[in-house]
Image (cartoon, rainbow, N blue to C red; front, side, top):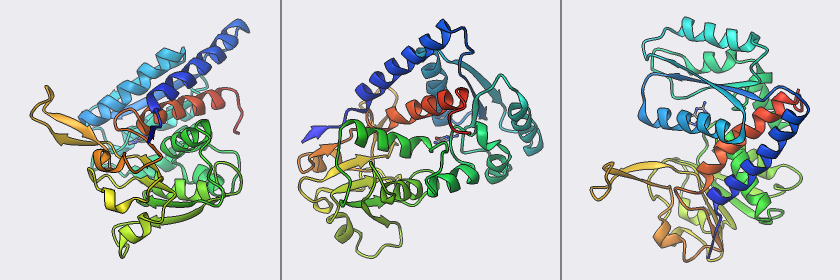
Length: 292
Ligand code: GUN
């Protein structure tokens, strides 16, 4: 078994991004600028957004955090989105999800100008992705592709099983890996809560991607020997031995599955590390006008 080291890979890519930023500076160009909009005080969202802003600083991007209270109206939030759409100093922005219940996430996503949608959540970017056109890929699927590419994991003709069909992970990664080219050309099966005999599917997987948000769901008897296991889950579970009172575990029972796998991503330190990097790559692409 070998570890797909997301942390180290993220550091390598950030170093590459810093070099690009230095080139921009030498040429007297404008630094890439990412804005993150955070609504309310969901602790996980706060942690994710802080990480995004800190990562921008690490690579030398400009970043701005717009933090509004949970009782902001949908109209006020849509006004912020409109302002960011128009602001030529902003290359890309994200509105951190989930939003409070009184705000329609779909309306907010639709309001984001696709050219600045570095999360790749707008249906225009999703449609372009599905057709293989230039677009912003959503961060987590892009992070998975980056891991496969950099570790040179073969995908052509492989059986890929994706657990989960969310708009931001399961569905897009299943489309991307079944498309022509590398990483892609795989035979992809999408499993979900209504799949009959799920383990019969997962046991066929050469590459198993778990993105269902259930702590340690994938057990040893669900994995073929030698499989590549990509664990997208980041689940907080109680842990009385930890100072914070909780620990992070993936959707895969790591202790049981790791000995069977040829490659596996740990949690933390796996896919999650690459999602922020993907956002930075999209922001740089936007600043350079490489996508639209
Ligand atoms: N919530 C969980 N993941 C994400 C993400 O990638 N982007 C945004 N905007 N919100 C999220």
